[in-house]
Length: 169
Image (tube, rainbow, N blue to C red; front, side):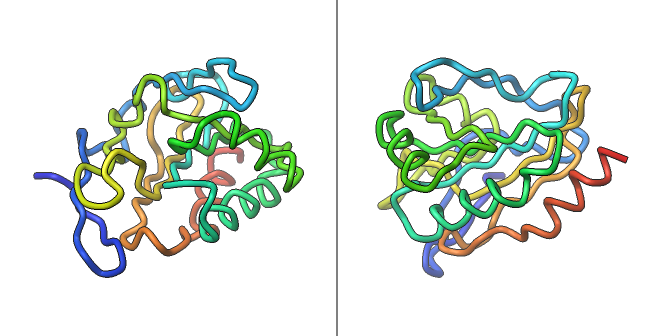
């Protein structure tokens, strides 16, 4: 059964498999703002926080990315915010808001984030990513998953940070 989220109260179906806590995080390739490719997911020997957002060019995504940049600064984790925005726009965004503690990347090239079940499959936002957060342990296992039920709302930051802190103990 497909996962659904809401866009301003209207249900929207997501494409891809349902990835759950305990599953291995699929390896995905995204493109950083400097056009380099970055592999996320899989076993990296380091805790990863993989965040998907619809577009950095919206107030909620902007705030979320800035918040994770600030709150994750003191953690030894690999944090990546992924959208379908082009790397050129991501670079301007990062420069404008001094985003330097996390990687902001695009899934425009390979659309690998469908492996995480977060690609919007229908409606006005078809083809972009839903708002979600995955915490992946050093061995590549998903230990925390948050698919934000309403795309226009922010994730629960405290839950994410607690999940990260639990892995770093």
